[in-house]
Image 1 (tube, one colour):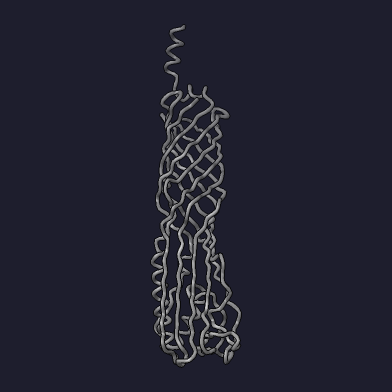
Image 2 (cartoon, helix red, strand yellow):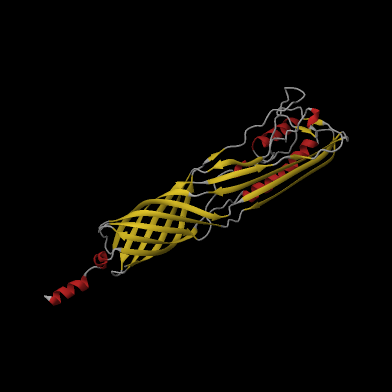
Length: 350
């Protein structure tokens, strides 16, 4: 009888013997196989206050920048009416979710068996590289910068202007130095064995937090000219944009297969979704400025919409580029995103 009992113990499956151990820890590695994000919402700054012009037929209003939104529409509309060939390409297209690419993921999960089938789990997932990118940001900045020169050069050819100088510069930071970490709590339910493997399902929730930098860009345009050789106009348009992201709640849903090698060691192949709000925001700053020297005066385009230039508000006229500065105006807010993690881990029970 003793000999039969000994043989039975030696033949006992590892998965059954493992039930005597209530705790297990898993170290794992893998990839973020995919990340999807909804379109989110975009909100451009509203039109500014109306300005006094020579005739209500040719209205204009304040804009904070020519590089995006309503300011681009006003300038391009005036150029179209005057027959100018130049048009500004706005930055509006990059007021959108960040793209993604596959990156590595590593982490650790600690589990406590509550019953023969159910375990509770605490996990920490860390992305080993940024999965945020915006491949067209540099192109958008360059295109907007170059189109600023073309648009104002064309516009100022239509009037009685001399000494015209149009400059524009821009730069972007698209290299992302960021690390995202998810901390989650979940329940894991085991199902009947499938050959040497035990399938399981996992569901729970937690938070996703990040640190480091996200893309940003800045643009500056400036034009200088003289009206009839007597009234100097010198205005500058400075705009910046930056991406930010905060901490988000996430839901965990997934499953996988577990293979036990002994009562102490096992292997897990796991696929899970981390789903929650996309806390990405795009913020813009705009700071128009004007240098006032020489004889006071103004000029307007007599178009609808109109563009007006003035070097002295005391004349009763203000430049179209004269809206109050924008600071951190949110032009984009993320919607919903899901990350798919594919990992392989080794389990140690104790």
